[in-house]
Image (cartoon, rainbow, N blue to C red):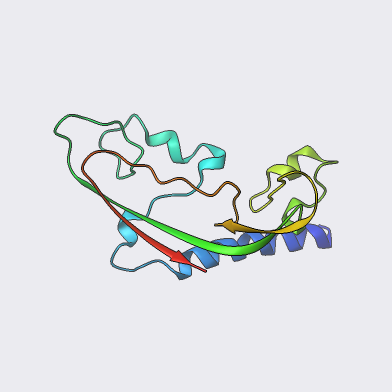
Length: 133
């Protein structure tokens, strides 16, 4: 394992730790996943019994509570999380890698994503969010 790989893994762990540190304990059971980039967030879209807010709208469906946590922070495009991107295209999809236009520069991100994560909205939802900077 190279030093760059270790730094990337450390950066990924930091992302996870930061996200968990700011979760309201009373709302934690309503926390929505932010893994939209890899399609895991949408896998429950057809399940009306899913606790996630991406479910189908159903006439007379149960009201739901949805909780989102957002962190605004300075980040670097083509930074350490990108490892050897664009020479190795798979590195461009690393968690925390923001490629933007392929030039290294400082930017503001939400949850280290550009564009930031979406809020899924349906009828009969109660939305809560925390925004940290």
